[in-house]
Image 1: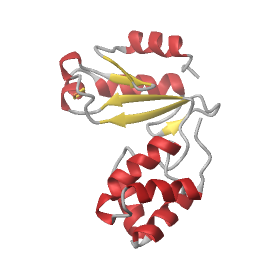
Image 2 (image 1 turned 90 degrees about the vertical axis):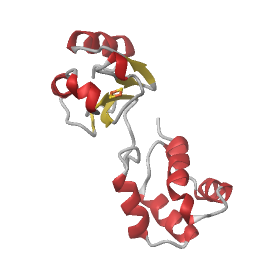
Image 3 (image 1 turned 120 degrees about the vertical axis):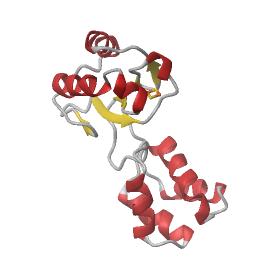
Image 4 (image 1 turned 30 degrees about the vertical axis):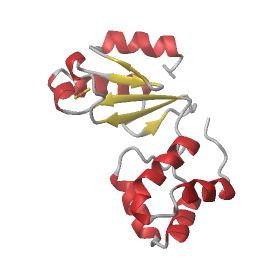
Amino acid sequence: MATRYDASIATEIIESFDARPELLVQILHAFIARYSFICDEAIVQIADELNLSRADVHGVVSFYHDFRTSPPGKHVLKICQAESCQAMGSRSLTTHAEKILGIAMNETTGDGETTLEPVYCLGNCACSPAVMIDNEVYGRVDATKLDALLEVKGARG
Ligand code: FES
């Protein structure tokens, strides 16, 4: 569940990085850790407090796939799309996940249960294809194993 945005806490986060614009990426990661996503209000506040334009901040937010701009579902399924996992079938695993969840990449199921996102290497290449569910990494995942994992996590939608 996403934490409610609080401008004074946002200021504390920014000040913990001395409001240094060159630390924008780290600041955005801290916002994600706190709020799970970067809302429009955060973009405006970060831009104002770092003396950057909103376009500057928005540009960085949209460049990095880690900086989602809407609240995630209760469960987050990330499927590795990097080279090793692609060679071992992550594309067909992604197609399977999209089919069973009824959503495309970067979408959340209508009931708010599960968000599907790409990730680019989970450091588990020897066990490709790899996925992460709610911050836990799993390797050698095929469609059957993914179905079982989602069932156990209650993330099947
Ligand atoms: S390429 Fe997928 S875990 Fe490294």
